[in-house]
Length: 336
Image 1 (cartoon, rainbow, N blue to C red):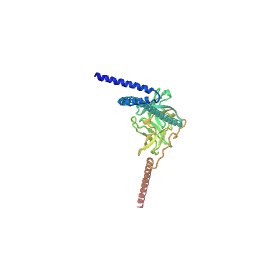
Image 2: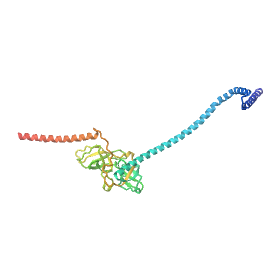
Image 3: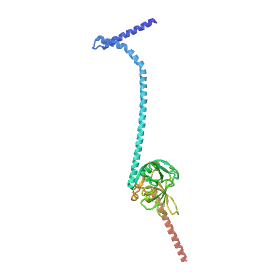
Image 4: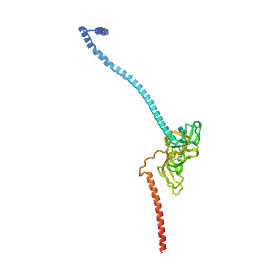
């Protein structure tokens, strides 16, 4: 044991001495043949030891670098995820603001065309008020000049009327509510009627019901209706689009004609609205109605018109046949 220990110490001492000699030789400048040869011999002798140390330490160094990189990557991933969430939130806010700005622009366009003075508002929540089934709450009230029985519109048409006005909020009963009735008329016509709401519950989607006062007036699908206007503009100002006739009821023997109408306003996405605090000086008539869609031949309206015309023709023909039969019968009796 002592002999082995002495030999190990001797080897270590020789290697240390050789290392020192190599360091001294390597630090000298010039191309001395002796130092160059010694340096070459030293490199050849120590290259296997250096390579062995590098091979043995490579897994440890690689593991350390991998652990360091993984820890940094996790931090970067979390940071990027937070940035993405912030960007998504900003994008959604920007899109929402853009939509609201567009709705406000449409509202101002409608009020300008109709000559209405409005107070812009936001439909905060959809509620069920006492006595009604389809109402919304606005974020404006008496402090903003809003009073009961004022007309509420958005950029597409009639929303409803104010039924309650608090200091900072107000309640609107929508035209679709079963308790709502709006005096209206057909476009390009003086034929008047009443648009009643058909909704018995919040958001049940029932359309409006429109009833003409005269049974002699023809009611066709595709016809649009606008508000007739109330005395002093309360609760409804004139000229506001109400809806479009989608079907006509068959009511033989009745003194009036009725049909169903699709509201001009999309109540499922109601947001920016305007309370009309002052009506127009003159009735805007049909100027607020958008351009009618091009109607292709053979559509539902054309089919209904043809059916009605054919029915009237059949009635006339039946009347003519009866008269002819009566005439020939009397002539036969006289002949006999």
